[in-house]
Length: 96
Ligand SMILES: [Zn+2]
Ligand SMILES: [Zn+2]
Image 1 (spheres, rainbow, N blue to C red):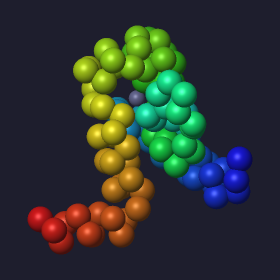
Image 2: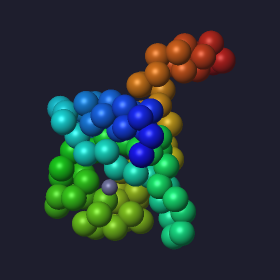
Image 3: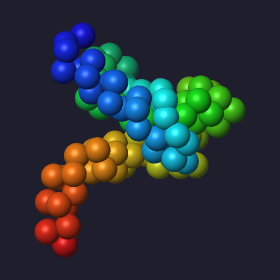
Image 4: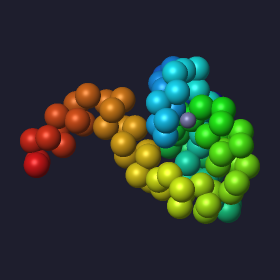
């Protein structure tokens, strides 16, 4: 893993859960890792234990059900990117 990837993962783990806002440390969940797709260490979202591997976890109930209960990974990823990069947020508000 590259240094930049490690730094990004570290940053994600220090953010609250994107679903419920549970305080960090969070687990860095890799999104959009379909069959045969390589893990992208920048496509990660912070999730608390219960939304990651706990009773309501994406790895417990399955991605499909989980996404229908909460949000799709793509939406959460976008949401997270806006919040973790303030410059993106300002770009967003200007276009609206
Ligand atoms: Zn959570
Ligand atoms: Zn995960």
